[in-house]
Image 1: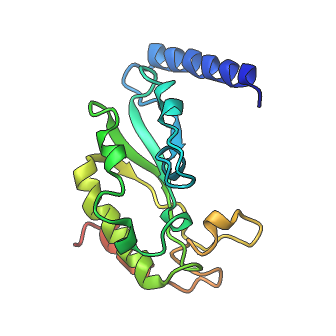
Image 2: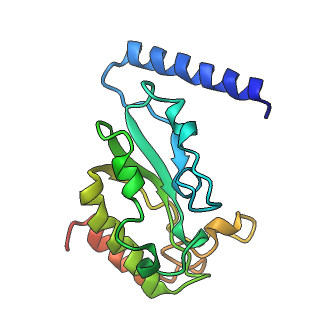
Image 3: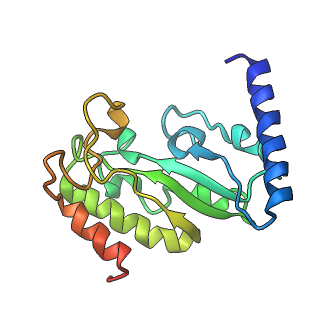
Length: 173
Protein backbone atom coordinates (compact mmCIF):
# COMPACT_ATOMS: atom_id res chain seq x y z
CA UNK A 1 0.00 0.00 0.00
CA UNK A 2 0.86 3.65 -0.20
CA UNK A 3 2.43 5.68 2.59
CA UNK A 4 -1.00 7.24 3.16
CA UNK A 5 -2.53 3.75 3.56
CA UNK A 6 0.17 2.73 6.03
CA UNK A 7 -0.33 5.90 8.08
CA UNK A 8 -4.10 5.33 8.08
CA UNK A 9 -3.59 1.74 9.28
CA UNK A 10 -1.19 2.84 12.02
CA UNK A 11 -3.63 5.52 13.22
CA UNK A 12 -6.43 2.96 13.18
CA UNK A 13 -4.31 0.51 15.22
CA UNK A 14 -3.48 3.21 17.79
CA UNK A 15 -7.16 4.12 18.08
CA UNK A 16 -8.03 0.44 18.55
CA UNK A 17 -5.27 0.10 21.16
CA UNK A 18 -6.59 3.06 23.18
CA UNK A 19 -10.16 1.73 22.99
CA UNK A 20 -9.11 -1.78 24.03
CA UNK A 21 -7.18 -0.41 27.01
CA UNK A 22 -10.07 1.87 27.98
CA UNK A 23 -12.45 -1.09 28.00
CA UNK A 24 -10.06 -3.60 29.54
CA UNK A 25 -6.94 -1.99 31.03
CA UNK A 26 -5.33 -5.33 31.91
CA UNK A 27 -5.66 -6.79 28.42
CA UNK A 28 -2.44 -7.25 26.47
CA UNK A 29 -2.63 -5.52 23.10
CA UNK A 30 0.13 -5.82 20.54
CA UNK A 31 1.00 -6.13 16.87
CA UNK A 32 3.47 -8.78 15.76
CA UNK A 33 6.47 -8.51 13.50
CA UNK A 34 8.51 -10.87 11.32
CA UNK A 35 11.78 -11.17 13.27
CA UNK A 36 13.92 -12.22 10.32
CA UNK A 37 12.60 -9.24 8.37
CA UNK A 38 12.87 -6.44 10.99
CA UNK A 39 16.25 -7.68 12.25
CA UNK A 40 17.65 -7.60 8.71
CA UNK A 41 18.47 -11.31 8.66
CA UNK A 42 16.44 -11.81 5.46
CA UNK A 43 17.94 -9.09 3.32
CA UNK A 44 20.61 -7.30 5.38
CA UNK A 45 18.35 -4.26 5.89
CA UNK A 46 17.24 -3.66 9.45
CA UNK A 47 13.67 -2.40 9.73
CA UNK A 48 13.26 -1.77 13.44
CA UNK A 49 11.88 1.65 12.50
CA UNK A 50 8.65 -0.20 11.64
CA UNK A 51 8.45 -1.54 15.18
CA UNK A 52 9.35 1.87 16.60
CA UNK A 53 6.20 3.33 15.02
CA UNK A 54 4.21 1.31 17.59
CA UNK A 55 6.18 2.53 20.63
CA UNK A 56 3.79 3.28 23.45
CA UNK A 57 1.05 1.26 21.74
CA UNK A 58 2.19 -2.30 22.38
CA UNK A 59 2.20 -4.13 25.67
CA UNK A 60 4.64 -6.80 24.55
CA UNK A 61 7.09 -7.12 21.67
CA UNK A 62 5.76 -10.05 19.66
CA UNK A 63 7.51 -11.63 16.69
CA UNK A 64 7.16 -14.52 14.33
CA UNK A 65 10.31 -16.45 13.48
CA UNK A 66 11.12 -18.93 10.73
CA UNK A 67 14.93 -19.15 10.77
CA UNK A 68 15.20 -21.76 7.99
CA UNK A 69 14.60 -18.90 5.57
CA UNK A 70 18.14 -17.73 6.39
CA UNK A 71 20.01 -20.62 8.08
CA UNK A 72 20.07 -24.39 7.69
CA UNK A 73 21.11 -25.39 11.22
CA UNK A 74 20.68 -24.23 14.78
CA UNK A 75 24.47 -24.11 15.05
CA UNK A 76 24.46 -21.60 12.18
CA UNK A 77 22.03 -19.45 14.19
CA UNK A 78 24.61 -19.06 16.94
CA UNK A 79 23.92 -18.12 20.53
CA UNK A 80 23.01 -14.50 19.71
CA UNK A 81 20.42 -14.99 16.96
CA UNK A 82 17.68 -13.33 19.04
CA UNK A 83 19.93 -10.78 20.73
CA UNK A 84 18.22 -7.84 19.02
CA UNK A 85 14.85 -9.07 20.25
CA UNK A 86 16.28 -9.28 23.75
CA UNK A 87 17.78 -5.78 23.60
CA UNK A 88 14.90 -4.06 21.85
CA UNK A 89 12.51 -2.36 24.24
CA UNK A 90 14.07 -3.86 27.38
CA UNK A 91 11.06 -2.88 29.51
CA UNK A 92 8.61 -4.87 27.37
CA UNK A 93 8.00 -8.56 27.77
CA UNK A 94 8.64 -10.59 24.62
CA UNK A 95 6.59 -13.24 22.83
CA UNK A 96 7.10 -15.54 19.89
CA UNK A 97 3.64 -15.42 18.36
CA UNK A 98 4.45 -17.77 15.48
CA UNK A 99 7.42 -20.02 14.81
CA UNK A 100 8.52 -22.91 12.70
CA UNK A 101 11.50 -24.93 11.50
CA UNK A 102 11.32 -26.61 8.10
CA UNK A 103 12.28 -30.26 7.82
CA UNK A 104 11.88 -29.84 4.09
CA UNK A 105 15.05 -27.73 3.84
CA UNK A 106 16.84 -29.26 6.86
CA UNK A 107 16.30 -32.37 8.99
CA UNK A 108 14.03 -33.59 11.75
CA UNK A 109 17.04 -33.50 14.08
CA UNK A 110 17.47 -29.79 13.34
CA UNK A 111 13.78 -29.20 14.09
CA UNK A 112 14.37 -30.84 17.49
CA UNK A 113 17.46 -28.66 17.98
CA UNK A 114 15.41 -25.55 17.16
CA UNK A 115 12.67 -26.44 19.64
CA UNK A 116 15.25 -27.00 22.36
CA UNK A 117 17.05 -23.78 21.38
CA UNK A 118 13.88 -21.71 21.74
CA UNK A 119 13.06 -23.38 25.04
CA UNK A 120 16.54 -22.55 26.34
CA UNK A 121 16.74 -19.03 24.85
CA UNK A 122 13.17 -18.28 25.88
CA UNK A 123 14.35 -18.09 29.45
CA UNK A 124 17.00 -15.53 28.44
CA UNK A 125 14.42 -13.57 26.45
CA UNK A 126 11.90 -13.71 29.29
CA UNK A 127 9.20 -14.87 26.89
CA UNK A 128 5.66 -14.40 28.11
CA UNK A 129 4.59 -17.08 25.61
CA UNK A 130 5.79 -19.04 22.59
CA UNK A 131 3.61 -20.56 19.89
CA UNK A 132 4.66 -23.20 17.42
CA UNK A 133 2.11 -22.81 14.68
CA UNK A 134 2.01 -26.03 12.72
CA UNK A 135 1.01 -29.38 14.16
CA UNK A 136 0.83 -30.77 10.61
CA UNK A 137 2.91 -29.97 7.55
CA UNK A 138 0.94 -27.38 5.59
CA UNK A 139 -0.36 -28.26 2.16
CA UNK A 140 1.64 -27.22 -0.89
CA UNK A 141 -0.66 -24.22 -1.38
CA UNK A 142 0.94 -22.48 1.62
CA UNK A 143 3.93 -20.20 1.29
CA UNK A 144 7.29 -21.97 1.00
CA UNK A 145 8.15 -20.43 4.39
CA UNK A 146 5.83 -22.94 6.04
CA UNK A 147 6.64 -26.05 3.98
CA UNK A 148 7.85 -28.87 6.20
CA UNK A 149 7.33 -26.94 9.45
CA UNK A 150 4.75 -29.33 10.91
CA UNK A 151 5.50 -31.49 13.91
CA UNK A 152 3.62 -34.24 12.07
CA UNK A 153 3.37 -35.13 8.41
CA UNK A 154 0.14 -34.66 6.48
CA UNK A 155 -0.40 -38.42 7.03
CA UNK A 156 -0.44 -37.84 10.82
CA UNK A 157 3.00 -39.43 11.29
CA UNK A 158 4.88 -37.75 14.14
CA UNK A 159 8.28 -36.26 13.41
CA UNK A 160 11.00 -36.27 16.06
CA UNK A 161 10.10 -32.66 16.87
CA UNK A 162 6.59 -33.71 17.89
CA UNK A 163 7.87 -35.69 20.87
CA UNK A 164 10.24 -32.87 21.84
CA UNK A 165 7.35 -30.39 21.71
CA UNK A 166 5.24 -32.63 23.96
CA UNK A 167 8.06 -32.76 26.50
CA UNK A 168 8.43 -28.99 26.39
CA UNK A 169 4.67 -28.45 26.58
CA UNK A 170 4.38 -30.83 29.52
CA UNK A 171 7.44 -29.22 31.15
CA UNK A 172 9.24 -32.57 31.27
CA UNK A 173 12.77 -31.42 30.51
